[in-house]
Length: 589
Ligand code: SAT
Ligand code: MN
Image 1: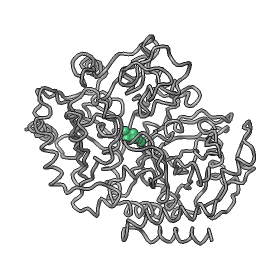
Image 2: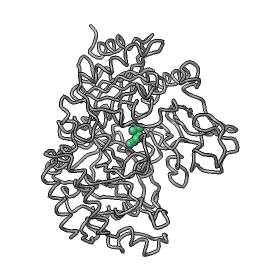
Image 3: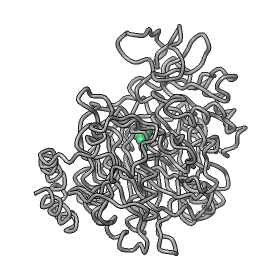
Image 4: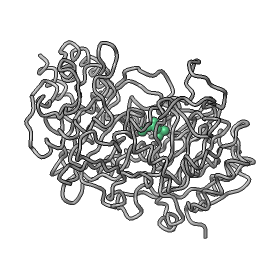
């Protein structure tokens, strides 16, 4: 008798019609085989899927060049298909499930002809964790199969765990013909199903990532009483050796990976990494909030990564214990056969091929590496990996940071008055767009909790769920709004960021321990200037003041934008959020 997984795979194969079906076991040996296939057999256009890089300098590393139109998430082609439009809310694209499936069925029919269907059984979370979920994805490209080995805990044991049950998250993926007009990324939360066609790009194709672990998981979380968030999970060790765990949300390509493994600019502090993108937050038996990272790899932005900005990531990439490490759409130093990107260490190489393989010279129009070029590398390579990473219970969280990319207005750091005010801070968050999603960059948009592209249900209800979580927590973490990105009159960043962000974290630890007081302002509780450790920095006093200035006129304009954004949720917006908004208006005068 076929198991439900076998039956489901057979059904998908019946539709997609691959030449053969290959069940992955997640082993290293198999990864070698898949890379071999990607170097010799499978192609995108005329390019092989993988090219071997200089193994002496970047061990176990391979270059992948995507289809030129397939370089970022495509939010306009991403849908959540609840039975009712209202359940998706005004910030998601919605289609009725039956109509969505009809469209997808047409696109999928026969799409794997001449190809292999890879079956990927994987866990999100440690298999022993009560919070982990078993999943099965099928795909038709070695790049996705290999990436999933890095990003998730993939293996045969998952099939044993699922056994004869129907208790698994389903992912049907095909790159189709890469035509953006025939591309759709669709979610069916009622069935825990993701169906994605036409793209091989990370967030569109590695279905355990944004599609399941955020969009579908956020719906599960609402139903089951937990949160799926776009957050870093990290431990901060102080000079006494005490480790405090925090989570931090930032939109895509705003420095989450750098924060998650920062090298402290202050002596005595050390960061322990648990995750750089996704956190699942559950209430533990002791009434505290516990975080696990369901992933096991980094899918980080390459440009700007260097020994200056993120030495621990350079070490992670060059160490590669775990096979393999992938570089996608970076440039290539043709003489050394090593990856290169804008902001990499050292001089610009003499002979460079750009991300599409074309000759590139400095000063020409366009970057050598795609601005959203990425590395995919195992967390187990990280010298900063927390010893709690495989703890099935996760780590207890003492503070939640909610960040955005704002050149103006938003202070470096502000503590919320209480949980509900913190939820409002998250709900009102705006951020300037980046290259991680297709479309114009640098445009300010509301991005609550950095979840705008990832919340799988009505965001008004999502705010309500956050409020509810706070009520159920006996010891809720403190919530902070942070912004590393404020600029001066010349458009230069005022705050040095990167390893210097430890200064803000140090203050947050002091607050967690009730060691320092605060300055009460209309927008939140700010540090007293003397309490922020600026030793060794030389930021002029007036610039530091700018980082904490409350621009009342600016906030009045902001309030209008917040109102316009929150207004769309109508009845779904919790009264408490409205009250918070009114209190802010009153405090601003
Ligand atoms: O969505 S991805 O996982 O591809 C990366 C991101 O945008 O955060
Ligand atoms: Mn992300």
